[in-house]
Length: 60
Image 1 (cartoon, helix red, strand yellow):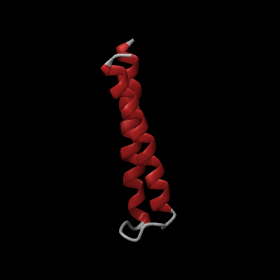
Image 2 (cartoon, rainbow, N blue to C red; image 1 turned 30 degrees about the horizontal axis):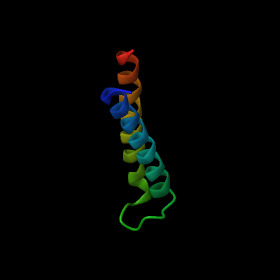
Image 3 (cartoon, helix red, strand yellow; image 1 turned 60 degrees about the horizontal axis):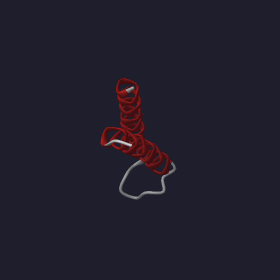
């Protein structure tokens, strides 16, 4: 497996973790982040996941 595919998989995993972090923030489990701000984390995670999927498609 080459470095490009590894970085794409890493981006995809980070996107999933950001979305999960947004879910935790939306539930109010984090004191520092108000639940209303969790939408930003969902959007950021979606952008990262879409970026990874587009990069994977271009690499084929």
